[in-house]
Image (cartoon, rainbow over all chains, first blue to last red; front, side):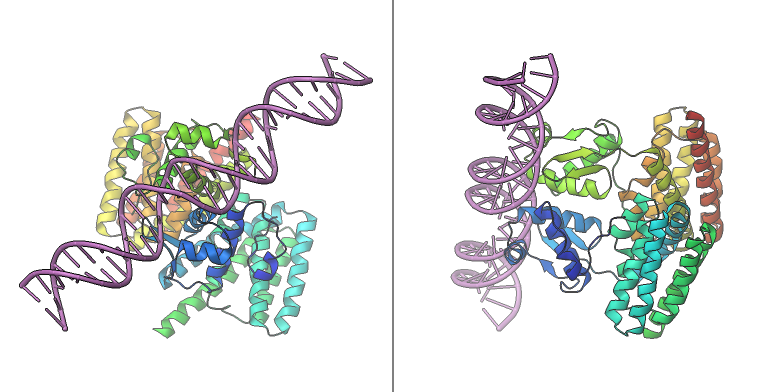
Length: 225
Length: 225
DNA sequence: TTGCATAATTTTGCATACAAAATATATTTT
DNA sequence: AAAATATATTTTGTATGCAAAATTATGCAA
């Protein structure tokens, strides 16, 4: 498994072989955390100066971010942070519902005992963090749990899709949709199924977990309108 | 819907606003069509000269291709064409089985009458092409049919994932797994379900279509070993 | 020969330079 | 003053230049 950095505190630890990769991660973080607002224009000179680099590695970073749907590239008119509307958020959720159950089944089938031990450990920590009442920490733990499942699925393309489209993060953009307590209980079923190598059950419980979240998202947006 | 160019004859028609996009498409085509072999080193100077451009737009193109898993980027050691092994091919198929049924359901639900008419027209042409006994043409028609379904699904992130990971193309890398006749019949069921706005049926028949192909792929690789 | 150290060459990553396009500002015209 | 035109500034896309790293070639001892 190869977890990608999302939170700035984690990013400090990572050594980058090339600048464009580093810049790509920095921009990605800034966009996902809202430091760069949707619609905002990404001026090359300004950003290059801010980040202490030239405009060349920015081009590569922009290209990567465009593929992830985080930025919009308008030829000769620059790059903007892409805004995801409610429909696209729901679209992503429906994709997530298709992909993460496949990942959970994959871990149950292909994960090593060590992989599964790691997931169980993360799950235990999730309980502690949930009790701490720190929403940001809970969200981070949730993000890492789901990404670990994808990472240990033994299906690399699947992991690449889930991580590079920021599916887990974006789906939880407006905060987690249920209590840490309930999430923990639902995760428990998934983890138990994985630990007992029951791929069908892991798939089922992951799907239930996500379907429940999507339905909450749907009723939330209905209320808001 | 916004179809991406894959076959060289289609690419001539497209006007590109910037070189890196053009180069990206050219390289993508060269890799998918096997002109650039897996494992092959992509030397910047050589390629830039061949394509008549400088090395700068190549960097952006490489970055995009790396995200699609078509190119491997080794820092300070250049880029190579990425080789997909049998396992990853199967992994992609399993992803495809999750995503394309969602797309088919999407068309049935959200496609305009015009979208659906387009798909029906493509399907009719598929029959003609199938009778012509030109495997390359059949494969192209199949590719375009499946990509059209994704494109008319009304789920843009879904289309972006399917197209940018070259899922349809790569899954059929070793040629189509069944006769044009059988494909046509299976497509017919999907098209009928879409035309009658039956999302559940469209989803079901697309899944059956792909599951059958995957099982053929599995028994083929078993035979080969 | 083979193995290893050293030198020459190539290749990469990044910064910079420059022309063309886009945007902003100033000027004129109605 | 508002609209239209002209001018100046900024910004972008791409080519080029340069230093550092990697690769290949060469020389030399065992």
